[in-house]
Length: 209
Image 1 (cartoon, rainbow, N blue to C red):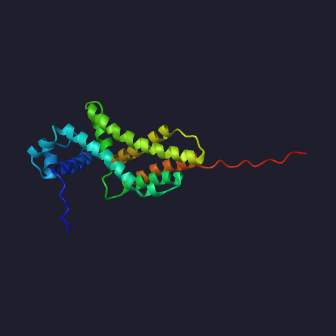
Image 2 (image 1 turned 45 degrees about the vertical axis):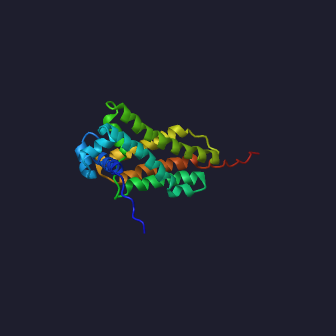
Image 3 (image 1 turned 60 degrees about the horizontal axis):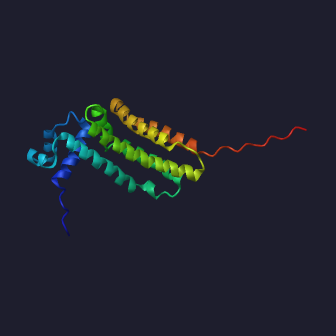
């Protein structure tokens, strides 16, 4: 039986930094914190990354790719009906963010709230995460709309979904109430179901004689 290859120091740095950024934020996390969590020396850190900003940018790029991989392997991808697939996507991410064993924090959302006006490269890297997720959700909306014969503004709805997702995380951080995810995602899902619902057929009124 072959032994599993140990992850590289760079990969461990990315994993531990991502975890710390999600929990503590960008400014509160130091290079020393990351090195200690990853059990590597500062020399090893600077071998891979010029500074903390470069590390955070690499973390955001990996975060974007990780979300894509997670979506591509999620159960909702096996759903053939476009509307059911769209609704299953919402359920999948509701389960992900509300699971008690998970960190209720998005790396892109956490970092961009701190650095949006001070670190333009990190802001762009965070926005690339939002754009990737928004585009993929918009495509699900377009597929469902085409299948259902509905006209929808996929870009506006995908922005609303992202706002629901990120806003729910912020509300949870403030309140500690895990039910905020069920409430907000549930309302958004109900809105989508209503949007795609079949219009009730109009009953013909009997003619007056």
